[in-house]
Amino acid sequence: MAGEEEERFSVNQAGLPDLYPTHRHDAMFWEALGRTVATFGFLEDRAIFAFTATKPYREEEIQKACDEWLQKLERALTDQLGGLIDGYGKAVREHPSATISNLDELLEELRKASEIRNVLCHGSWHTPDVNGASLPFFVNRKKEQFDTAIDVDFLRQVQRHTVDLIREIINSVTHMGWQFPGSGGPGRAIWHIR
Image (cartoon, one colour):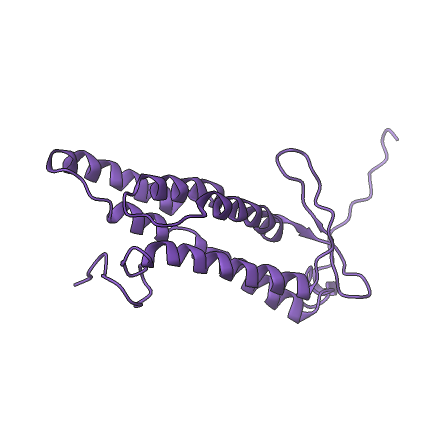
């Protein structure tokens, strides 16, 4: 109405529940979500380093390969998981000593896991149902809405599956006789820190 002042409101900060807006989920849910998301971090860069650092080159190729390697490492540090999966696949395919026989299947599993990771990291978590399952609001780039309610058991299953993928990636490096970077495990060290 002309001349009438609109009524305006502000959030009552002191009236918000403790731990708002995560207060409706059980702490066990948030712990499981956090551990699952953190597990994905182990997929993100070291295997690319291992494959690109151990690829043999002829003498005349070394300088060019070294220059290109810095760019690959920068991408491995900054790429999102989808790009890293592609980079890992390319590095494995280009390495003459790679022994992994199920690379295409592993890459497909990594891509599926990446889709779930995006939901877990970027979804807006709705109020859980009576069983503690929450339907995150998430729409992917294809405009598809995620429609599976997630509970602690689901998160733990995803975390265990991600550990299986990590094991496969580590094995793809160690099977060539190299130590997986940062592991202190068996094999020849790729890089010695002084």
